[in-house]
Image (tube, rainbow, N blue to C red; front, side, top):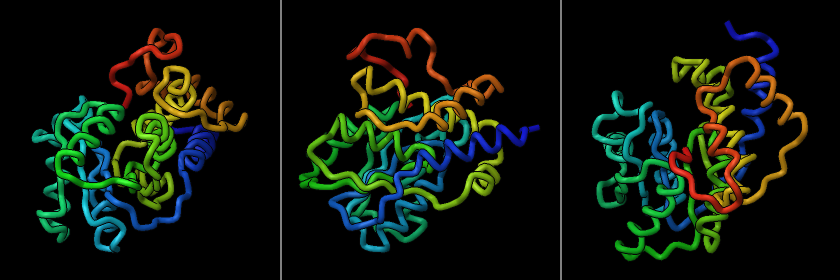
Length: 231
C-alpha cells in the first residue's frame, strides 16, 4: 500500500524529471532502451511528425528487461517501430549498451559509421529519465543540441501502464539520486534541484523505495571516478 505522502513525494519527483522541451526537428531521434516499449512508440510518433529523419534505438538488456526483451531492448524497439509504420531504412540499431553512458558513446559511433551529420538529438526516454539523460548528454556529447521527449502521461497513468507502482517509484527515486550524484562523478552537468525535491527524495528512501539506488560505495566515489551500471 502506497501512503498518501509517498504518492505526493513521487509526484513531486515525477514533475521535476520532465524538461518540458517543445518538440522540434532534429538531426536524429535517439530512443533510449529500457523495459518500457512506450519509448519506441513515442520515437515512432516523433518520426511520423517529421521531427527526425533517422532513428537510433540503443540498448542491450538489463536484469529488468532480460525476460521481457530477450533479443535486446534496441531490437524490440526497432520491431515495434516497424509495426508502427516507420520504414526499415530510417532505423539504425545500437545493441551493445548496458547503461546511459554507453548509449551515448555507442550511438555516436553508429551515427558516425552511417555518415549521419548530427547537430541536434531528439532524446526519447521514459518520462522520469528526461532530466538525467539530458544532463548526461550535455556532459558526454556537448557539441549537439538536445531536445527531450517522452510520454505525457501523469504518474498514476504511467504506473498503471507498467503494472508495478512500487518499481516505478523506485526508478523515479533512483533517477533523482543520479541527478544529484553524477555531476560529481563526471558523468553529467549540474542541475538545480529544489530543496523540496531533495526532501521528498529522502522521505521516499526512508519509506523503502530504494531498489534502484546506486550502492553507497559507488555514489561516494571521488570526482571523475568511472562507474558501471549508470542506468
